[in-house]
Image (cartoon, rainbow, N blue to C red; front, side):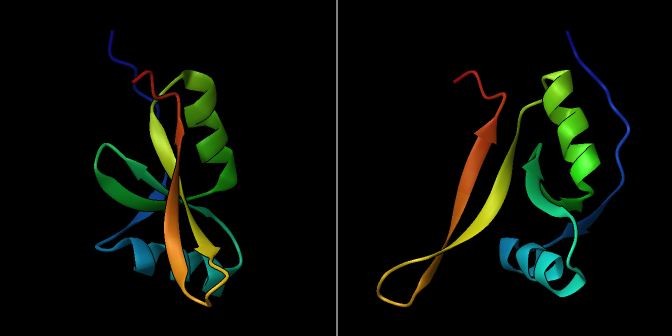
Length: 79
């Protein structure tokens, strides 16, 4: 069964650009949805979660050595 839900977001070419946008604007969540890198409103991410649609949050994590890595947090991923 295919589920559809309407969301609004800004698409980016890279994960880094999406995360930087969330920092610069002070709002939104960076996610990967169906292979697309998006920044969406928190309410839209919550609606995707509630609808059971698989996606992943993109979070920048600071390592102890001073470097940063991007971590994905899967939501509704049955794998």
